[in-house]
Length: 396
Ligand code: ATP
Ligand code: MG
Image (cartoon, helix red, strand yellow):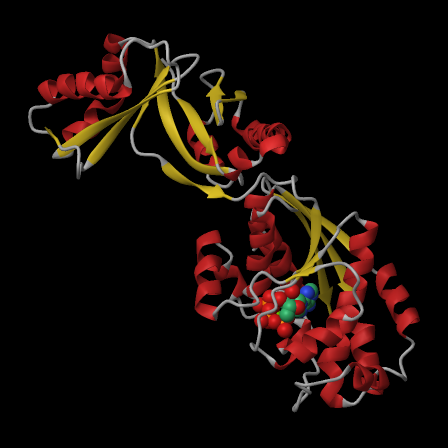
């Protein structure tokens, strides 16, 4: 018999009245992800998503790999379905996991019986199967406390399923159940991690990137699109709104006191991002800001930059140490791309002595010689939309 995947649901199980809606969304997400790997049937029963290849052409290994990136799944296993009787279960284990058992010194069997009509209790089933396996593999001892390997048997509605240890899933909530938000995506380490963390809470993520050609290069832009693509391995798809920021940065350089350059620039970024967000149905902004990391990330600076925005600003990294952020970046595969040495527009015209404790009054005064609305309108007119999704090839 063929192999299928069982994806175990995480927090969705706790969602009470919304559970059905969450499950429907997860099933839709899994279906969409499986499409490129062939013909798979995807259905949910008993808080588990079943992913079943429908013919011999399916790329089962590719599909299995992709399942590790689907939010809403806490753990997953490849398993072999069989008939719901002890002989069939034993035969399936021998056939499917027998080689694994020959490579380890001890094992135990753990059974779960959600079909209560099955004649043996879970413990009886584990004992029966464990006894037969111990006989068939004399070098592998039963050890119920510290086994080197665990054989799992799940007696469910449609069939029994046997498998080895499960692997951790991506966790979080299914993409799309939490609305949509817009991440301000730079080429740095932090903002892709911030996007991933909010996406993990079931939020669809779109991106905006500010680009200052010729001060920043085409490569810097490709790098950001590539970072977005890497995040879509988890989030599914994303549109990156690329905004030409050169005119605004030059206007700031020519018309504002130097110590306020970064703050004024960040207020433009926030305001433009919010306009794009509202236009594209996003209910919040996401940034990679982190308390105390740089001069523009003090409380006072955040108050001043946040003052132009009236939707929530999510800063999931605000209280983290750099090491913790780097660990996540490494785990999700964005670190290597983030550390490529292309300039970000934030490093163009950086003040020698940035203001760390600004007041709103000071910043408004620093902006008084700018025609903000006209600058914003022109920047909005320059937007280039680049669509990326998890099926795309790497850009770099
Ligand atoms: P990152 O590692 O994400 O670049 P950072 O530590 O370099 O962050 P800043 O450069 O102060 O911090 O930027 C703070 C946040 O502002 C970023 O995390 C990102 O959300 C946003 N941001 C900075 N530069 C850009 C840009 N060019 N386009 C879009 N958003 C940006
Ligand atoms: Mg940066």
